[in-house]
Image 1 (cartoon, rainbow, N blue to C red):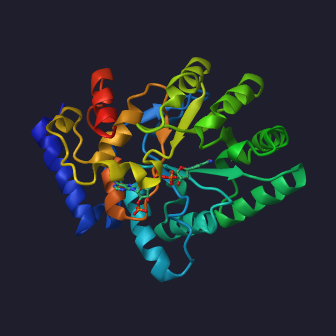
Image 2 (image 1 turned 120 degrees about the horizontal axis):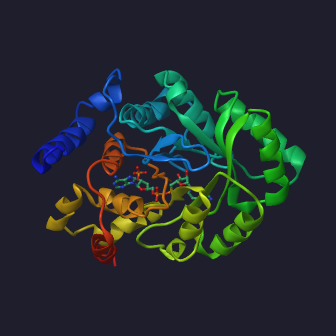
Length: 306
Ligand SMILES: NC(=O)c1ccc[n+]([C@@H]2O[C@H](COP(=O)([O-])OP(=O)(O)OC[C@H]3O[C@@H](n4cnc5c(N)ncnc54)[C@H](OP(=O)(O)O)[C@@H]3O)[C@@H](O)[C@H]2O)c1
């Protein structure tokens, strides 16, 4: 097991290099990933626990000036061992940008692509999925989710057909509000799905009550959105130095503490923070390394953001 000093040195190097001369972003990626992985219960397939969200951050024009900074984010993510990219047709250009970045970086075969359907009616759902595949420059999606429970029954029927045809590997449902957790549970009670995407963070802990335990019991993979509450959680610690006890979980930033709080929940499969900056991407990846907090330390993290 690497020593704590070794871990800190490695973390600092990773962050420093990503900010200055990012080998993480530019390197030909031979380094084996040490990123923690968790199994998708439906299949046993392993996924790295740090994913990448694309809402807002990837909604840019498809010109070089806009794509270049995100190119660095994508290289840092894939080269750092990340796989799962979460996008949606309702995120403006995010699907097309994700597809183009994967093509530019030649990393299509390394990604686990998750998108969504947010349409009413079967025909509109089918047209939307076809457009997603074109935008993402792929013939197959790894995960397709019903976005915010829109027209859930119809769209889940469509998703199941696509799964049978081999166009989609896993299916799921999503929401981003605590007030919708009961609705997610009601769907799960009736409809078999592989994944649920939900909001969970130190600031939004409702999922601990029923939704996360339910997913753990029934073998449903979870994707965690809004881990930083769109970045708002950082406002609570803006002028606060990182506490000494962060080292007890090998954390070197507030972002890593927030992500480790989430990853320490046993029902969590992958957390999907979004960022437009390669240095934040490298920071977030570090949360998938080293120790995770026990129950007492998790409460300490939550109190720090109280
Ligand atoms: N209904 C749904 O299905 C649904 C709803 C919400 C979200 N989602 C998914 O979940 C993803 C994540 O949620 P989110 O985008 O709402 O917000 P989030 O990941 O909680 O927060 C993103 C914000 O955090 C900042 N950030 C990221 N890493 C950081 C770091 N290491 N240090 C400091 N700041 C950092 C980013 O800043 P910069 O922009 O400056 O990098 C960005 O503004 C979405 O992108 C989307 O894929 C799905």
